[in-house]
Length: 132
Image: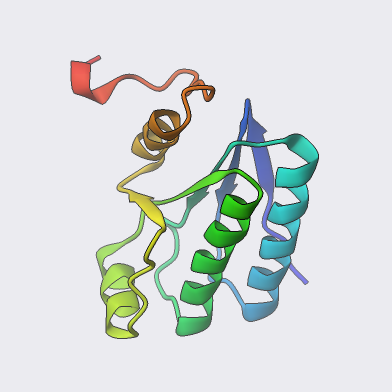
């Protein structure tokens, strides 16, 4: 079974999904992330789905579930890079991902995490509001 790598960046975990996820891969990611959040004390989780072209209802529910698990473990989750077709599909499936923070890209996702928890330091992320 394929596993999705989880990278640690300071107090954040970064997950970049580069393949269309199968159900077992999504379940493994959920378990791996919960374990890493607990072990590392991470305060933020950023899931980059920009490479995902297709999602089904199971994957949509898993993204919401991962966010809920992270919240219980005192971490904020941001899903970044959602393609328009994926967003449309999720809404058509009735999965609006209530309570899941989203961002257009990883950079904005890191800024969103930092805004939710001042302890997070988005190292090397320019402040887009100040034009830097």
